[in-house]
Every structure is written in C-alpha cells, then in structure tokens.
Image 1: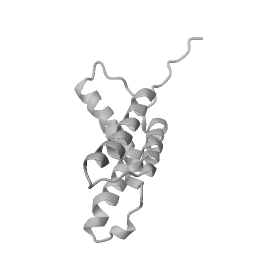
Image 2: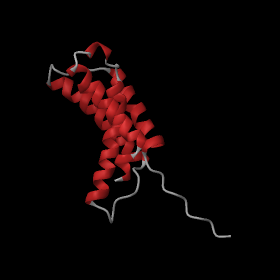
Image 3: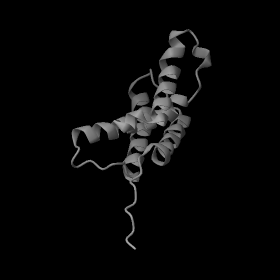
Image 4: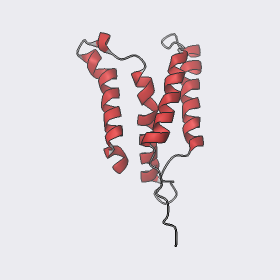
Amino acid sequence: MHLLRNFLFMGSLSLYLANRYLLAGLDLAPYKIPYLNDLLCLPVVLTLTLWIQQKLFPMTCRPALNAAQVIFAVLYFALFFEVVLPAFSGRYTRDYLDILAYAVGGIIYYFFFNPQPKPLPRPE
C-alpha cells in the first residue's frame, strides 16, 4: 500500500486527473497543460501495475520494476497509442512529441518512483 501513499504518486495522479477531467468539466480546457498527461501517464500506470502485481503475487513479485519492464512499457504505449490506434481510428492522431513524453515519463518513473531495494549490510 505504501506505493499508493507515495507523495510523488499522489501528486502525479492528482495532476493527471485535474488536467484530464477537472479543467474540462469546469470549462477551463484552454488552461490544460499540453503533454502533461502523456508525461505523467507511465509513472501513474507503472506504479499501479507494480502495486497490483505485489497484491496478486506477493510471494513471487519483485519489489521494483527492472529497466527492461519500464522500456517495454514505454515502447508498448508509444506503439499502441501513436501507431496502432491512429491507423484504425480517426479519433486518434499521431504525435511524435507524445512518444518523447512517454519516454521521459518512463525515465522519471524508473529513477524517482520505482522503489529501490535497500542494499544488504556488508559484513566487516
């Protein structure tokens, strides 16, 4: 549960929801910050993913996501939302800055959100 109580996660989730839904609901859509949701998407989704893994598989789940898992998530989001969906629906458009935002979000997640295992004490 500590993952969901993390100040960075709570702040990112709040910013994401405000930028995505609250501003539009209050007719403040012109004040939306471009690319903020794409930047915050992976830190929020990967934190939730790790939390769900830890709850469903407590005995086998690692305490943090490794670099390959984060890179896979960045590639998956970039390909799905910027290549696949625009090819099949006119509702979605390709925007290569979104891919950059996903990549930066993945880096932010890996270095700031991803819990780092504590090193074992060295015997003296």
